[in-house]
Length: 107
Image 1: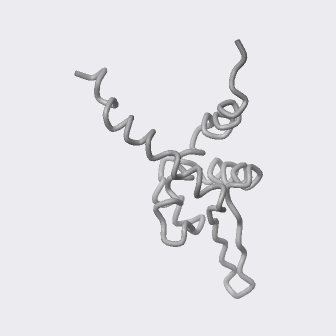
Image 2: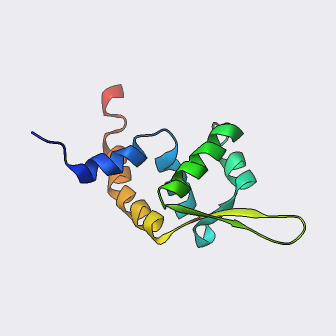
Image 3: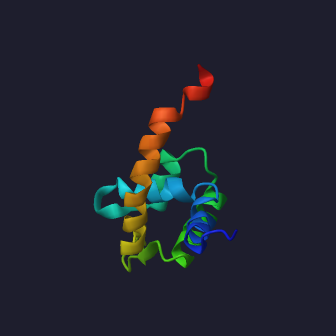
């Protein structure tokens, strides 16, 4: 039996720590975007170095775009691409499943 290449691709992205959470986080932000400092503040458990690496990884997968303003001070914003927005929509059923079964083993 061969593993589905489409699921393999999805888990190549979502199977890595923080990737799914970052996509979800940006999906609930206005305009699907946030500043690095805002993400670091709201996702306090991730280190700045790990956040930077994960954002770059998601850019390489085509899920995020990095926008750098030309003004002073320079403002860097990360925004979901159309591909990232579509992935965020596909996370909703997983979130519903987790809400249903998350506490099952703890009873």
